Image (cartoon, helix red, strand yellow):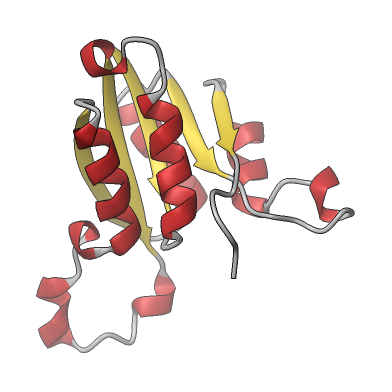
Length: 142
């Protein structure tokens, strides 16, 4: 089996582009295990305690969109969630599941910005010995 870690944020178009890439891998329906990872960051720390029980990656639209696309293409998919530092969490989950590759979602950038990846993407590329694929941005960006 080929294990692929797919860290997604809240952008559905980007997550769908990542899922489409994974589903397009040769014999993905027979040989790929996809691990969709959503990391809750400190931005939601002011959430009241009574809502903590509802904080679940499977409730995030981008996670659901990617999961549905992968399942529609018969790719085995597991949802993972964490909270904390995005870069460290991605690298830790890649190690834990011994991912064969990490598939990140790209963002549209200005002409100058195209010369440099985003901070999370750049950090992952520089701090792992695993292959990293950066997909296109998907549809329109906000």
